[in-house]
Image (cartoon, rainbow, N blue to C red; front, side, top):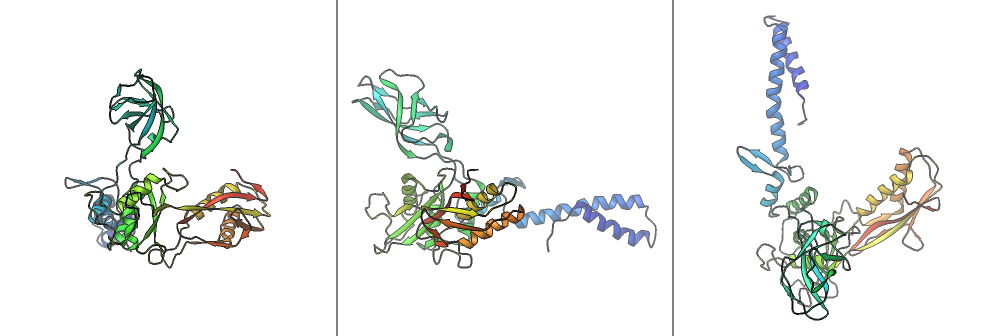
Length: 404
């Protein structure tokens, strides 16, 4: 067993061995010399020991370091190196929000020049027009982009931007009417590691179920993908997509992300070549790159009721956290893609009772029972269907809504 050793551990082994070999037999070396020698040798032995252990961890994507290291003049990131070897590429860089704003025209026949700056009171970010647009009619639509990348610059339809320097022939305030591209932060270590592990464990097979997950991960903001055969269309593929919680708190992505996933499952993002899904697999039946077969996941919300509770401590807060984690980790079962030994598509009342019991025991509290429903009669179990994910709705303790 390769265990982590400390300098003191090695030092004690060495000094005991030296004292036994020399002092107890020949008694030639002074005690102080043996102590100093043992400490020096312990440090010398420990350095290659730890380096060997660290090197071994870099061989596998679940333990490789994401940070930069310098080895013999070469700077590299072990996890990213593995990602490139497996065909995942580098972590994705953040992108800036892009959209369209509508400004009311005061005087026609003028041009809003490219690079004109606007500012949002909501985000505090600066935005700039991407092309020059002539003012015609009562209003003019102007493409704009955020000058900094990340989710910090994301705007919703109906939000306002105002020109930093009023230009006179359009009103100072403009309204966001369309989001073309969401801003995304730089890819996190956890998300990139997940992509590398997926590619490491499931190599592309030219259109197998797992391939759609691998291809979809090329799009920033994708949390998970659930592919199915479209039973209503020969050759049809249905793709349900969940989004990362930093962009989509409820994990339900918007139409922009869905179209990007459809495109990524068809065309290689680096070359633009349609070398991904088989030609007979239909993701875009209309042929207009709207990808109606790529759909957002549906969230099933479960209300949980705890009755007969008695005890001290913040039982509700801890229980709510545990239940949220439990529901968030449930996902539909897909034969050939999901693990048969660790299925997570069933939501059982018994599982909720077990969670509540674990929390209650840790707080020396008691309760009678736990029930659940989905805005209707009480149910004892539920199996997630196509593209369905679970979420905790309301938590009731002794009949009262817990709002903590």
